[in-house]
Image (cartoon, rainbow over all chains, first blue to last red; front, side, top):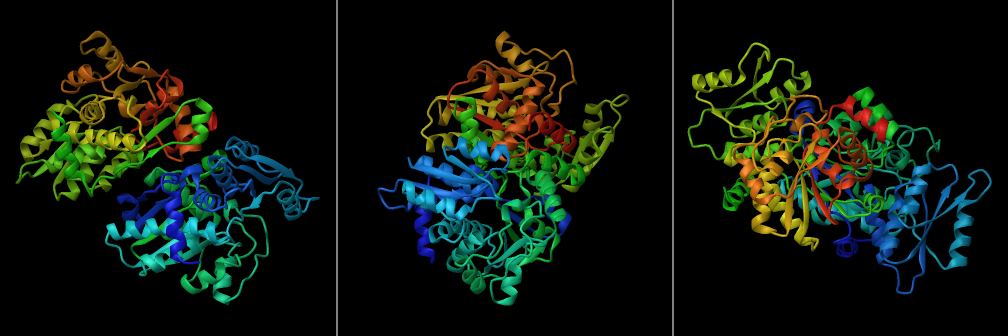
Length: 318
Length: 318
């Protein structure tokens, strides 16, 4: 993995993914006493950065590929579905049968075939491997894939250029972190193009496997697999590919509470007029509520928010 | 008024106002059977296009100006307040004493002195004229001002360039319309730079003074002054300067209901992940619910939404 792969991915994404704005708000800065810059990946195609990695991986497939397969109940599946459809390839997304109806419907609407499985009785990986073998599909992993990391890294290339325009040469770049694909990709891009900017991963309390792993110097797992509103970033452990990159390049991980993520959603509503989902708001929460440098850049990684949850966040914090 | 003034305003705005993205969403297009492109001015500094006109007017003041004054309970006042503060000029914003606390607080937070008046007993224009005379302030009108219209017209320059990138040469550009400053500015810019694109004003039912005036060939007033959720665009009649421009360049006006505006807010939440206020959502409502060309461009003009109203829109349509 190196920045050349990220630059190559940027070339393949040009005209397909969106160059997202780096937003800020005078009244937000005044309230929190620091300059906060928000990379609005909620405005990305399909509503999250995941489209970048999906497009990067699908566009890098060898000629003659028949189709792709992804496991996902969320943003990765939607990104893969649309990227495959636009390449004229079949996409199968394997989803648990208790996934929200709207996510199943959206994944189908992007053109994918959805295969449902019972969490209690089915081995998801075995099912996926069988489908790949039967139909000649290529598995697109959510983060432990060099082309996926390269696609996510294009966020870092954009941040480096946008920071340069603002004459920001040093500081933290806070990144919402599940398996670490986005964080690792951005870290590699910044290493090459803005070495004064340092990635720090942000996770919800109770799911801070990356922060603990970085502190321990080895990959540690979370004790639990559910129990946070930040569903998009609840992965069991750091990725095999992503962890060594972050171990080398990232600062200490930051942890925020679910309530801080919900309050960040409400503040983004009021001051930035963007919609964030909880897992996409943890980096903004860290920028506002945790100790961070001034100025601080944070990545608002996704905006596919459940309307009822969003209403609840506004009722409490809006 | 001509495009040279708009280009000059664009030069003054560079590095201060934001070049806002032209967003779209595959699932929104699929659901409504047409390609819909949304100019996201809710992402503009201070949350609406009004900052452009305010900056244009303030930056065009003669050297030695002491300060500015605006009448506004909303977006224009916030735009003028911030533009004046960043020019080191005093700003007085004259607001009704029953304006929402949060708008008064925000206008002050942007650095303006807020002068409150009683709607029942005070002549606002006389009060403003007295303040201007006493303190040597320059009145910045919300739409009937050549520099304000020029600033709003920079939205049109950006749309022309963005449409060209997408190879869109002809079609309607739907614009949320109060007094007509944004619509007139965009129309002048498109006339020069994208003559195949035609502005059409969009207003809420009961406040369709511009649509009726365009049809009648003369300026007509609304029968009522309140009674729509689209508070940002409830002006009594078309502007003296804006109407002749739109009479020459705009197509027939479009009218939508309050409910359509609220549903457009919910659809923008789900598909575009942007926050719109009702008056900033009427053009998107027209793109989705009224007869319009395919592709259609619409301007989402503002996003300073009341949280309770936004929750209600999501509860009904989310």
